[in-house]
Amino acid sequence: MSDFFGKLKKNIDKGVNKASKKSAEIAEKTKLQTQIMSLKNDKKNEISELGKVVYDMLKEGNLDEEAINLKFESITEIEKQINDKEEQKENIEKEGLAEESEESEESKEFEDVEVVEETEVIECPNCGEKNPTDAKFCQNCGTKLKD
Ligand SMILES: [Zn+2]
Image 1 (tube, helix red, strand yellow):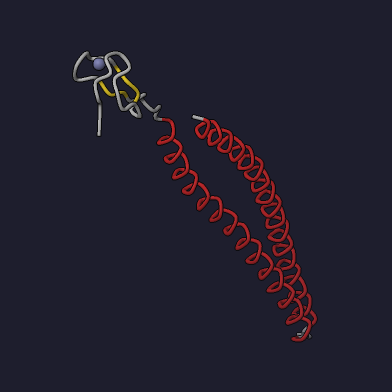
Image 2 (tube, rainbow, N blue to C red; image 1 turned 45 degrees about the horizontal axis):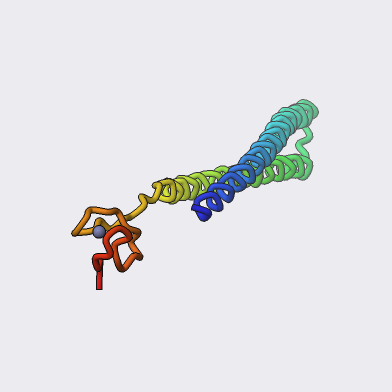
């Protein structure tokens, strides 16, 4: 029984740790999501700026390919950052899922512990007295219970 309460406490502690870990996960995911949104916004701005730069160049009949490439590179750099953040977010999600399946296995183990042990007795073949399993002789009549 003491083991049961030990396990119960351990499970409660684990639950608390898991809850705080879960909220840290959510906070991290939210942070990444905000960064991704801001980067996507940057990308949109850069692309529209690239369009404007190219437009001005075409208007003046002077296409500066190097300037266009620089702009393009900064856009692909933003794209790379977006991909990195998306990947980090996915990893957090994957870790969360792995932990959830681990958790269900733990609660299964916990359910097994919950089965209350029945007090086993040996019934005396002579008088029917219920004796503890470790008793060699009946507590009532003294009949030998086991070898
Ligand atoms: Zn007996």
